[in-house]
Amino acid sequence: MSVPSWTVGEFTVHRIDEVSLPPATGPWLLPTATPDVVARHDWLRPHFAGDDGVLRLASHTFAVSVGGHRIVVDTGIGNGKQRANPAWHNLHTAYPDRLAEAGFAPETVDLVVLTHLHTDHVGWNTRLEGGEWVPTFPNARYVTSRVEREFWAGYAMDEPRQQMFRDSVLPVEDAGLLDLVDVRRDGTEITPGVRLVPTPGHTPGHVAVRLDSGGRTALITGDCVHHPVQVPHPEITSCVDIDPDLAVRTRRELFESLARSDILVLGTHFPPPTAGRIADQGGSLRWEPVS
Image (cartoon, rainbow, N blue to C red; front, side, top):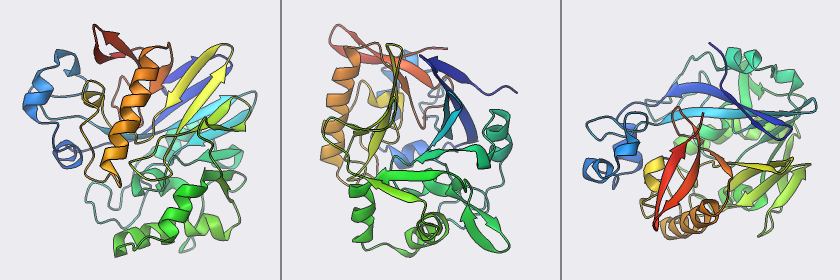
């Protein structure tokens, strides 16, 4: 099966599928996105919700290539990780094969961008080797927001989150591969054409990733938005948002800006079709998928 991809100027963006998330994920993650709310928007079916109104979500990452430079944006859940969430626990997926199929053998990756440090975004930071968790991408620099890392450094983590840091974050730090970026209000370019854009609320240092090339632009969302139902309803918050009110404000501002543009949006948890644009139809926003 071919790896889905999109062209943004000189960038090629590949979606690297990990796993479809179980039906229980939607009601847990976005509890106010009820079947009644979903039923108001026929365009959510069949791709983004079932006829029963249950949301569909996925875990995937994005692999970006430009001029021989290889970038991975977020690293998913990972294999063989001990997790409290049954949907994430001890997975054995073909993610590495899909990454290689796209031309991203781990040793060839130059840069790993982490939109935030949640469990389902850092898992493939590491792989198990000789009983130890070691960086999956040994020749890459891993980057995230300084605000993000410092927040978790001062946070009273429960044991499952401590376990995630032990197996998926600390080994990268201990190897000296993690770089912390001071992200400006208008965004910070980390390599030509790749900009971290502050989108706080889900976590304090959360960033989206903007790609600019040849007059074209794409935005990889991370978790500032989890599902297309939030486009007409930015007030729908995630049960794991650190600051729900700020997350809503971030979405409103972001969606209004995107609706005035031709920016291609790539949803980090949007099931296929994953790419689209935000359109304003008489004051009501909606998601319009593109192939």
